[in-house]
Amino acid sequence: MGTQVLEKIVQESKKRLASSLEIEKLPIAGYEQVLKITDKNAALTAIIAIHDTTLGPALGGIRIKPYASFNDALEDVLRLSKGMTHKSAIGEVGFGGGKSVIIADPKTQKTPELLLAFGAAVEQLGGQYICAEDVGCTTEDVKIIRRATQYVVGLAHAKSSGDPGPFTAWGVFRGIQATLARIFGSNSIEGRTIAIQGLGNVGLPLAELLFWHGAHLIFSDIDPIKVEKMALKYGARILPPDQILSAECDILAPCALGGILNDRTIPALRCKGVAGSSNNQLLKSSHAKLLFDRKIVYAPDFVINAGGLLNVSAELEEKGYHPASPRQKIHRIYDTLSAIYEISEKGGESTDAAAISLADYRIKYGIGKRIVPPTFHHNVEI
Ligand code: NAD
Image (cartoon, rainbow, N blue to C red; front, side, top):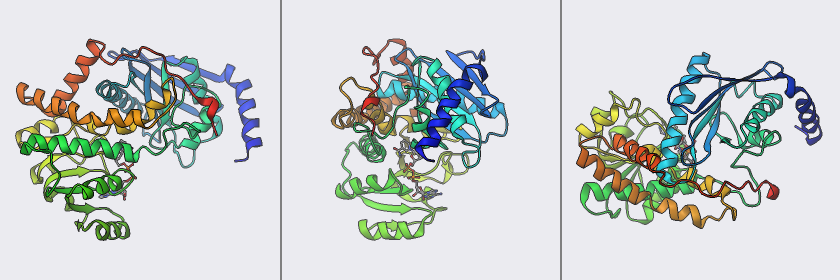
């Protein structure tokens, strides 16, 4: 879309929004604020859920999805925003947990009017919720939302954090080391067999790190050309997508899909640990206990994959983004996971439950609470 056309839409939206935007509070126990946002003229129905802001303003992505019903969208945003509270608390980023969903098909119903109306609602929250891209919402969309609110993060500008993939991969690498230390008493990668499901933005830089540290690699991807090329590059063995989860290996690193740890797959696992970047790896939280009972060490996904969050949240530091700051924090994922493994062992509870207890403890005692308000460096946009 041309700049002039967008400018016209922005100006028209500003005039119209004052009268057409509606924000309704939904009373949901355990959540600070859940807001239903509607704008008939912009065909917008969205929900913003702010779960907890004890440690700082709520930070979380915008998911754009054609949910089957409003209740499905509500269920999703409640689950996701609570997950963000835990992830931020564990990462000690000085943010709380929030998330938003826009009920629309991102391929056909995502208009500038809809995005601007959503942005106007975010602006009205005065910084209690800071939004970013997520499934169905691109950086280009966030750029449009930015025209209606300053409370966005993850845009391309002179001091932006850029591709989170390598940062997430570094966190997963450190998490794999901590998991190996738990299993074998040594964190050395040398000679260990590691199976990676998905060679994308995270899986590929992870493969590179593991290769140089002496791992034997097993790869799987639904893209046959990519997997063959990469297997040649790193001397990896290839397994088809339907066999990777039962690969005999030391560590299985899921870096593709959610819900892969379930009643069907857990009994078939032949790994000693699961440590990868995928979000929502457990189909249900009860599956963490199944892994615990099988003595498979599971690195909770929201702990090991926090590198992306740590990276993007560094953009809001007072001095602006510098990659050394998230690098240092991501490095410590090793210590955080080691502590979680200890809590799990001592308490006889799953690693997932132990991670949630640790997050709740940090919230209760304000550990990692934000002191300086976030700074938005939008003046350096390119
Ligand atoms: P991506 O889309 O770049 O890569 C995913 C890869 O998985 C692709 O190569 C795809 O072909 C492959 N794939 C899809 N289905 C597969 C299957 N059934 N078997 C094997 N391979 C399959 O995604 P990404 O950015 O690398 O993220 C991977 C996972 O990590 C996602 O669940 C994502 O939500 C999560 N995550 C990513 C980041 C990040 O910084 N990118 C941060 C936190 C969490």
